[in-house]
Image (tube, rainbow, N blue to C red):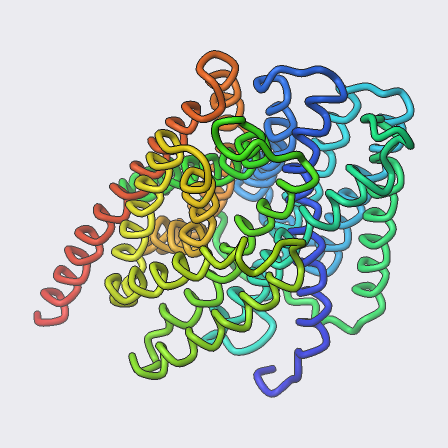
Length: 467
């Protein structure tokens, strides 16, 4: 099996990751759009993320309960059928935007987002694992980083292209907001998803099966303290990242910040998500233990320049308007090398930087406040993968169960933006960022805890080996 060429299947699945990221990031466009359309409060507009990411929790909980009692569903149907089912479910969610727009009903929009989220939950469970199987085990991490980078590419261009479709191309002739502006874009997204499903069904994909794994009943995984802490940390990370992205357009609209329109703000939102893409490419290189420091520096520099040029070609901004991003890339380089390729230490450093950037965004005005909030994206980059791997480290037979619990923690993306929306209605958008400040403090502490915990585990293993 190791000699087989998986290039075509991997390219096909990477296309899926791109669309997955693109449509997920469209929520950041929908929030200010639906807020104005239905005259919502910030709290009410954040129900977009509550329904979408709440579906992740519901879907993964159902999957967890089935897998611990009846066995892994993917073992019964196979990865390929599981992926196609997830795509169909996501496409259905996109199609449901049509009746939601026709009836101009916020409730129907939220229902469509919930179905869309369920579809992406199935993909979260199946597609990531499938990519890891498409080739040698030792290069699985590299493949996952690459597909995640293309997922980030989708989130980078979504604000520009999606914002153009909804705010400009399909808006009302007089420029006013209309529910109908979402009809055509989401039907296009549904059609593309169905084409990807058709392509996956026709391409010869190896249908791996997970054989002979023990079904672990109960909640034995929770006897591991670092897993429980990891679940809380993933909750805070996803919640913090989604909350910041959800409020960027509203933040940049504030008179004391930049007083920008949605049409302009969407380009800066692309920089936030583009930063995550840059950071993931750099992280894939920096956290690779087999590369020398000199080669790491060279490869990281080349990757940073290449991805920066891609972002510059996408956003409708001049070089002077985005040149500040070069400072954050330089800071990212420094943080990676201070972290010395250790996932836990690097996680703490990145979280600490984001705490400082958020505080700066809360208390400064104008461009400094804007740059501070946009710089958070590049330091979010490695957090999901690092938190995930640290949380399930050393679980043994409970690894699968622990993994399901960590995926459930994506619920943070549903809960934390709603809390921030509530604070924004009372204290204003700028001061509401105190919520993600606490989220990143939790991540910082988890990284420090794992640095100490993993060191302790290694010492124990060395002692046992000595005997």
